[in-house]
Length: 94
Image 1 (cartoon, rainbow, N blue to C red):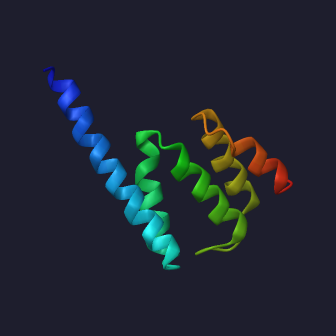
Image 2 (cartoon, rainbow, N blue to C red):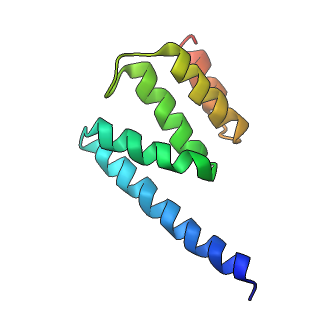
Image 3 (cartoon, rainbow, N blue to C red):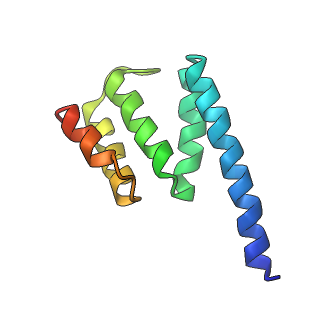
């Protein structure tokens, strides 16, 4: 097996674990922890993390509402091929 394939498998499992932690923190309304966890997934190209960060910025969860930041995250999620990112931005009027 190629070394890069093994590294990719390990990284995939790590990213999945971080997403679960982020979602759990969000569910528990620990928005600071959720934001940190979602942000750590952005360099891995995680479109779900980008969409969630956009929603948090739009709704002011763990921060003051920030429409510019929300739009930037929604656009990033769309660039990363999240199928609902453009719809979310349009629905929220940003």
